[in-house]
Image 1 (cartoon, rainbow, N blue to C red):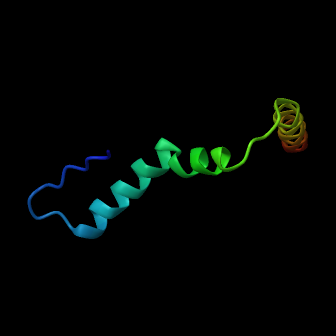
Image 2 (cartoon, rainbow, N blue to C red; image 1 turned 60 degrees about the horizontal axis):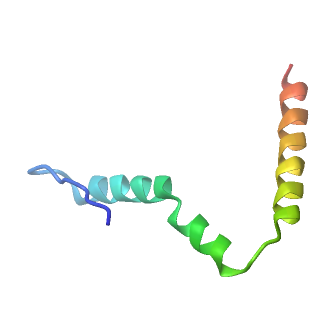
Length: 63
């Protein structure tokens, strides 16, 4: 459960912004989506390798 302390006189939009940021950091939606259907470990590993190679290409392109 997320608890967001709201100070006296604080704007509700600011409190909502804090809540959304905290919610994103907990990765709740990412966890729910990953549990929706099973993914084989080999597929997960392949995706990680693809992401790593993409990041490597981006870093080498910057330099």
